[in-house]
Length: 288
Image 1: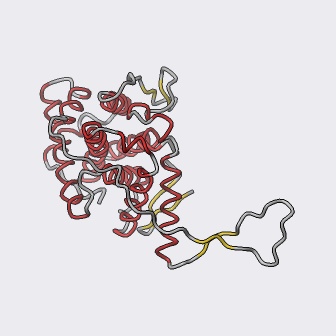
Image 2: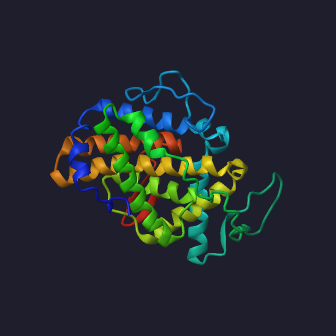
């Protein structure tokens, strides 16, 4: 899934712009600018060297109007994913029940695996064609008309490839699908790993969909903001994808290195977790 997108001549032109650390800081700052364009929080400059923001503002989640509600989104996703895997394995119980002080039990009691909750689908939305994320990204990153056209093309190619697959999987117009694509793309790039299995990708989507359902703020987001977040996640998965694909095609190690570094920074900013906390091995998602 993550590395199947092709960009043909776009990659050749784009690769010339990425072989330095400045492009990483530029892309991260642009991500925050794009994310804040539909929120009330001002963008800040991201410092690649320190791994933080020059203003001291430590989380980008406020840009989505969700503030602290989503700061544990990755942890919640991991819990949901593990629970789904237990259900899929056919196990009926998990873990010992926590005993209260003074209680005695002849044999450890076992917690039942709760049934899968009925989906609320807070991440779904109706398309809003007035949200022009391609232009927002291009204006944030491009300095010349040619560069802006290039970024627009990368966005268009990425979104087209993603939505073709999203439609087949039932993910279209669902923030959970965009999150899944973002996670899979950036994790495989950062760890330079093989793509996860279809079963693992489906498990990530289910876990992310349930995680979003646990955050009431998502239910309150208007379609326009959901569309913007969806586009932003897809669009900023496309930039490291394009960079990585060109580096692999030309066997250019500096380009591959930049793609991996960029993917790592994006993981930490969006998921608020270490880029090394999870990886894909043998098609499965492994947590450290």
